[in-house]
Length: 130
Image (cartoon, rainbow, N blue to C red; front, top):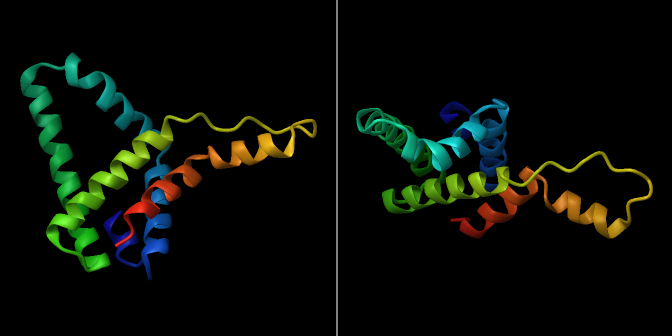
């Protein structure tokens, strides 16, 4: 992820690359959702501590990439990582649009398009543009 993000030319491309990286592995986001929803209460304390430390390490590495690529402060980089992470977790929980048939109205199609993961993610993270 870091290698891809550091090649971004601007914030919009950075967001697009981040979204692509998150969705490249089809299991990554569902596993993050599962971790946030189920693993917190279902793991032994020692295992949960290890999972939490690993997640902290990954988010810390991402914050460094954000800081260097976007040229922002440590605090803003940390805030952006959490904002992107929260936006991605929220967006991924929306179901994918079903195949559209000709009988679906224009309004419904616009709603389905707006509910796609990439659209939701970009709309959310645009609020945090540095």
